[in-house]
Image 1 (tube, protein in one colour):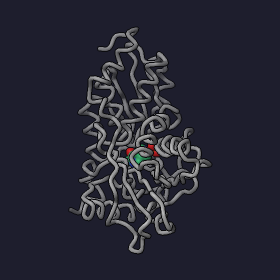
Image 2: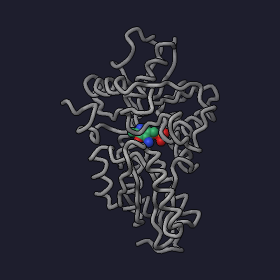
Image 3: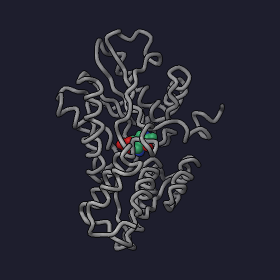
Image 4: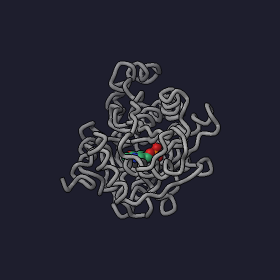
Length: 315
Ligand code: PMP
């Protein structure tokens, strides 16, 4: 167990563990799943966040929020880290907690895939399942109530309102994309759950080039099958999500997201989660309208966790 007062200890543990593999994910050109009449001067690239050690983009904010809480002295002996999640943040927090020796409790809607629940338990975190009809809002309200009952016990990371979430992307994802495209990126397309990815990555890219276009992706309807994304109008709005920063929001139907996800595996050899399919569908709408450009699409995770659910359950 990590002893308080030795404040550089968590950083040593990050360096000397699987956590040092968070970030630096590959960027891959999408060549086949593109519009038929795509201009030859438009390039589409996918940032494969499934290559993070916890298997998703959320490793970045999970590590960032943990280290931020440690730096601010919030995590002390006997405290439990808690958050609401649609799954990937839970997996990431559970992984970080396992490495740092800090107990983690998570609340998520009961209808998320079985794989997600098992992975979280495998990392030793405690899981509370909330009403699936309430979506992540149900999990958020559950955690708020738990924390208000036992405020001394919990450190509530609150990924929906924690600036350390988007800053993780400001200090990693955005810089990586800039370098990986040789500074040529013109458009960033990313699904919105907490908004952390698009806010942090987008802000960084705009530092490098203020004309980079930011395109957010949301499900077309409140009830949808795109795990990880949020339909903003029908749910608790994340405090870190500032829609005014975006040039555009593309709304994607579940079936379109699934179709793209299946095609990614069949034609590109990329087994991705359905929010990747949603983001790619949105990117293709943007690509159709362009004469030239370099579009980077965030693929938040890979497909293994979804094999027993749509879009893959008919296999
Ligand atoms: N896709 C998946 C699969 C996710 O788990 C998440 C995170 N909830 C997102 C997209 C959206 O990322 P963000 O929270 O950074 O907006």
